[in-house]
Image 1 (tube, protein in one colour):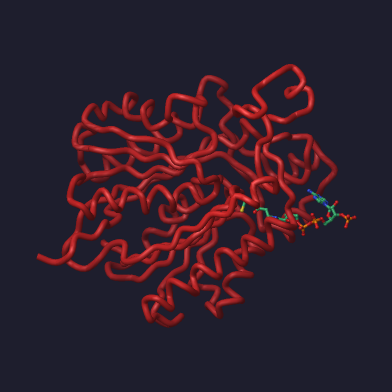
Image 2 (cartoon, helix red, strand yellow):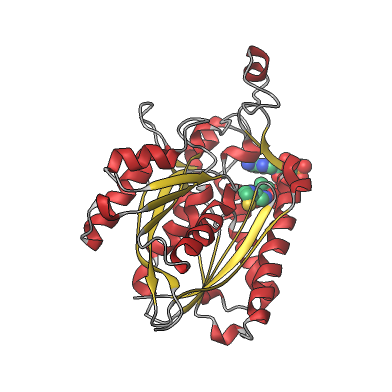
Length: 329
Ligand code: COA
């Protein structure tokens, strides 16, 4: 029997019905469609408007589709890992809520807080449980209700983010497909450039923190922009070198969808054809941990068994990294 690898055996996603277009934003802050489109590539974002619904509910919708596609019951799931920065509560973990809502009574799980790198951090973590043989069916979720932490009076951030959820099923494979390698990195010295100031144990919620709008995402865009291009391209270069691969050996690159200029900047730095670098940011904006699984869902029909794909992300923390995998179906 070959080495056990963790393979993505299915993917699904969910975005809410509510839409905020660039034209809508023109009515809310001093901005315009041309600026947003040329600086970010975003045309619209989906927003979860129902105040009784949260991140777990979007994830549940995505998981229902996936379980139906794969014809498996929730009791067969043995683990759920959720990349998110907008869990339903500070505690308990959203993974617990999701397990309860879908009836995954044999699963345990937890959340991973790595911002826009949340999905790749979760996928690598899950892969280790598969590779050791202890777990057979893991749901890896990337989901964020960014509208719950976006200040719609701040044009520097409100144009960027949207809500959504994506999920993959991770299963063991011994036929040579699945996750081949990964590089994950973190640098806490970047924490102040992209973060939510209040609501944690350093600055718990007070009337003052609410008044000062410190429960929203804060970002210094230019610093993050440069660090994102560097982090993603460095980790892709390193993973290709470690595996003795050239650009011709890679079928697709799926980068965290933060900004079309960042994605194309990475492609240009590494000399990848633009057709290999998949982009769907125009429809959803930056959905934080959900962008990569939503991209996998949207472009799933392109992939063939054995295709070599690189997933790469950069996010608050700072956190970043890349995953090299062979598509399994
Ligand atoms: N509409 C119109 N003008 C805007 C604007 C908006 N929404 N936001 C900023 N501007 C203005 C600025 O005030 C500035 O004006 P000035 O030149 O008169 O001072 C000008 O546009 C350029 O601002 P700048 O912040 O330098 O723009 P940018 O090219 O860096 O683009 C971001 C801003 C946020 C789109 C970009 O920095 C970015 O995408 N950063 C990374 C964000 C990200 O991906 N984060 C998620 C985690 S990876």
